[in-house]
Amino acid sequence: MVFLLDGYYQRYDLKGWARQRYEGMKVKPDACQECGECEEKCPYSLPIRRMLKEAAGRLG
Ligand code: SF4
Image (cartoon, rainbow, N blue to C red; front, side, top):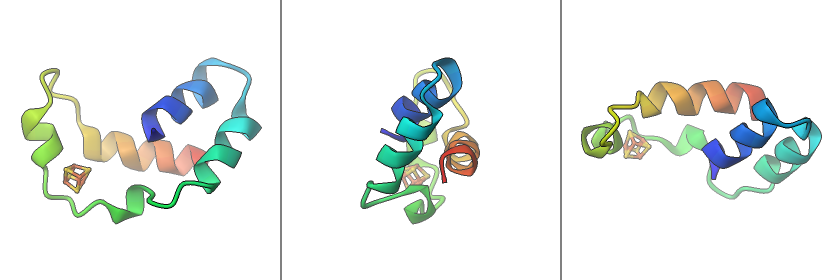
């Protein structure tokens, strides 16, 4: 959901909308435990932890 909203934030002119939806999320990227499991499983080797932090910086 964070990346979906970040896509709306960055690619479309929906910054306020994306921030509002982000604000309503019960669990946000600061809940990340930095375990790295998502990155181990990601077939595209995306730096998910870093991406989450960057998206949180825009949306939060
Ligand atoms: S590193 Fe990935 S799998 Fe681990 S807590 Fe954070 S988001 Fe979840």
